Amino acid sequence: MGVTTSRFPKSSRLLHSAEFQRVFQNTNYKISHRYLLILACRNSFDHPRLGLVVGKKHCRLAVQRNRIKRRARETFRHQQHHLHNIDAIVLPRSGADQLSDQQLTQLFEQQWRRLSERCRQLEQT
Image (cartoon, rainbow, N blue to C red):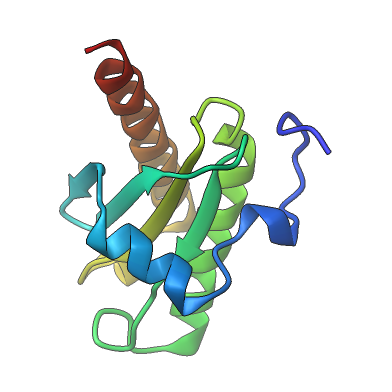
């Protein structure tokens, strides 16, 4: 399966706690925003993978947590062909649940572009 597809198969997800721990312990890229934090590190695959950590502390209602996760997955699917072979973890911050769907989509797209640019810059050095 090519990475240019707009699907989000299991191979594009971080599924095990060891995979999450590896990203937390070996963060190469950190993209920070008032409402969002993305941590990422290189992986040994030929495509990017996504993990989501949306806790009750920052998003009290399940419907809001699910909405944020849905937006993160959707924007990741559309931007994945621009991302390098990385494992990325999305961590929403306080206030992210108050953003509209359009604002969330714009925020995620902007942060995926920043991550892609950061990966490109660090590869060239």
